[in-house]
Image (cartoon, rainbow, N blue to C red):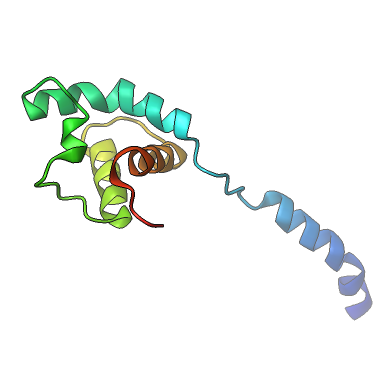
Length: 105
């Protein structure tokens, strides 16, 4: 029994590695595209100035860390039913952080 297990162990490990989800780097272009298509208009309306980017740079921002940013993106996705996949949320967070917030990872 032990011999069979040892014999198939490399195949089992390889199979597990191939089935594991791939963690790709965030796609900043996708994040920007989503922000422009699904976020900008609502944010422009909220600021009252017609500029959706102002919501990210305002002095009274509730976003003080990457963790807060992730929560806000997830909240908008859920509450507004934006139908973003987790990967899309990660792309938006990465784009917004790179473009506006500049939080350290």
